[in-house]
Length: 85
Image 1 (cartoon, rainbow, N blue to C red):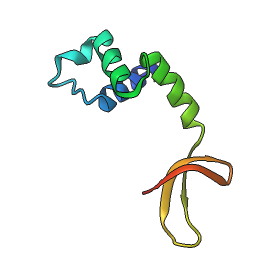
Image 2: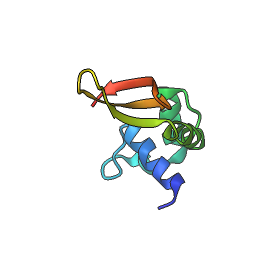
Image 3: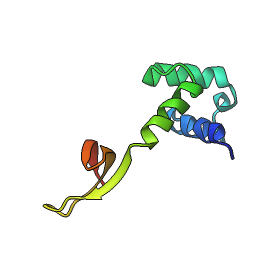
């Protein structure tokens, strides 16, 4: 599976489309429309670019103070955005 088909699959998931029950999943222009309406991203190519940029920042860590696990985006040792796992 190439990266773009993985992006399209992720796009379907984010847009709430199920390949087994939604007719729109094969209509790329309809998927792009839903993607734009929901996130303001014009097409799956734009989503792919965003994913590639964000993937470089993905991190998982444990707080030394609380012992809680976090996932999110970081620059080295500094969290930019995190949520508890």
